[in-house]
Image (cartoon, rainbow, N blue to C red; front, side, top):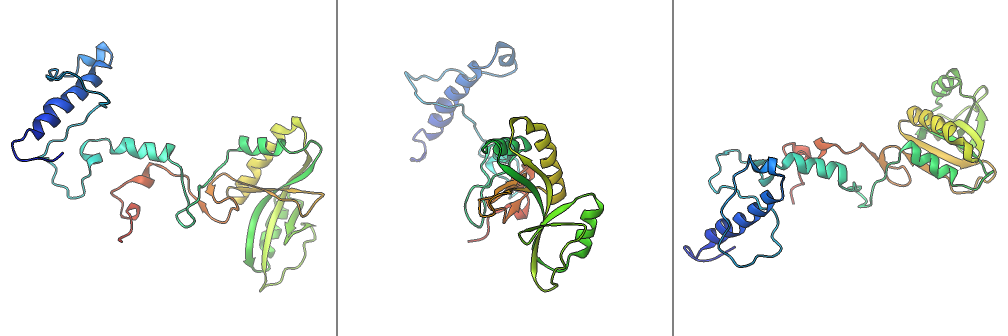
Length: 252
């Protein structure tokens, strides 16, 4: 709002618009709540449309913190943090695409939506494209009672795993469960997914046992890209705390 000094800007903003917005908001509250609030006089206007609840900020703020914002001054900052953390859509900062995370229930529903009788196996990714022989990793998996693993695309027995080349990248995925799709598998699948997610750190893969070329189902309990390449921690209110240097926009 602009205008010459003394033209009535403050009167219009505070005595009319703010007063009416505040009055309408207070009148929408219960009688019990209204008794604790002071109600401004109704401004001398004929009609105002589209007026939302209003907030008035004193021009001469008592805060001397140069990092204060409208949100911190009006004490709505914490509510905005909660809103962005819980309702906002997380997006990958590098690829500008939405990030998705799934619950165990959603994973189970996805698998059960596959054709009945289809043979599938549930895998927990342990090592992805990393060099090394990974002997200790395979021994630890066998000692935990796991029988099979898919190593570089081939399912093998952990009691007699193949010898891996030291300077070659390898991918190791533990076979958690093998099953045929049936409607009565919900409880079993939920337990298997929980095991896979705990072992892998939040990801799981479901592969077709009869068709190696079939597209695999990729699942993640963490926010990630659809191919599981990048994963991000679940957003919390600390992720949108403006006072933390790491949360600010980079200098342009």
